[in-house]
Image 1 (tube, helix red, strand yellow):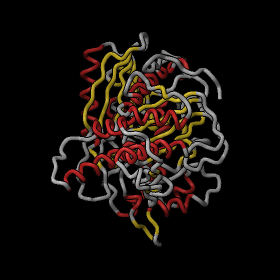
Image 2 (spheres, helix red, strand yellow):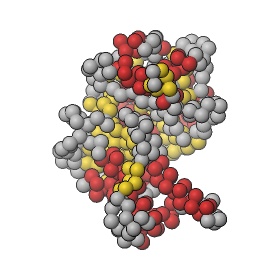
Image 3 (cartoon, one colour):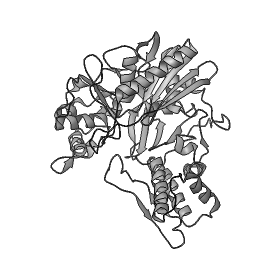
Image 4 (cartoon, rainbow, N blue to C red):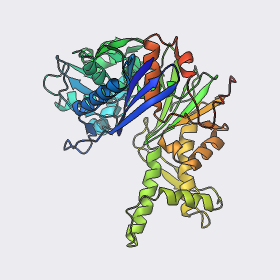
Length: 461
């Protein structure tokens, strides 16, 4: 039973063929996903049609090579949107999750995001947050600025668009894991906050119909294609074995902490999102996870340039070596909020507890890594208990010092999935469930393997 899956990320696109019988990945393909210049400083846009063509080429290549393919799944970043016309063709670029239009001034001294949060606050039972880059915040900006593309009939995520085009459909459909990424979505009621949308002047008819768990978007070349899912939930499904309450730490450009299960109040940095099979799911995002480390690396290179020395070679290996060789100095504390936070985009990072003894490159490197880990740890509710810790993303895979710091901070060994493309792997598992090969997420995720063995603490919290 072979599953073909895609993860359409912000910087790259991945395609994977997974054998549901052996539990092995047969092949993985990658392609870059460049940004385009739209002429506005706050935009971070991509060519959605070009992205689809990459996915289509990958599909054709892998289906020829590994026929028969039995099912297909798609994961994609969930906050960005593009507009389509009544024939299902893109009439706009893809406005990614990094789009900054929501942080622009709107009225009464408020940004677009602040204005919308003010409207949403009148709904006393709301269970969602709004941030710049969330699809409906971006849509509100275009409505207000008069920049809606001509002929726009629906908006959808990039995953929805790719699934629709692969299946030859003209109308996108949207899974709840993507719908929540747009904003204004109640994860318990599983519906949009239509009252607040209408108060903001947003016509809900711009939204695609929503599908339930394990439904298909259609057939692509005769292969059943599952509706696209959010990359956060897909990565969790592809990383976490059914082992009691587990926590997933993902560090790429940003950072993320995710887990399933009910929690009490007291974790304002966490956002409740839909998961599969009706399970509660919580996620917290640091906007400058791995990017914080890149900021530090660029700072060191800037010092070299200032001294007239060559600075073309990345310094990550040198930073790793410096941290390995230097004794641990007194704590130099770093807050890595260099891009703000979802709830407070204007907050900033900081460095403190500086002394004559610890203001050194190794101490600064360690402080940055501890700041990255600490920002995610501090998002957990007080007294939160869990029995398993998994880690994913290049920030964790490529930095042993960060892994050790996370293990010390969270008090558990960090299990890293054997397969690196966790979201694509989760999309493959989701497609196999949708096709009936697996009976649910527990059975599917039991195939997950970890580096260094499959030891998974089977203890409940």
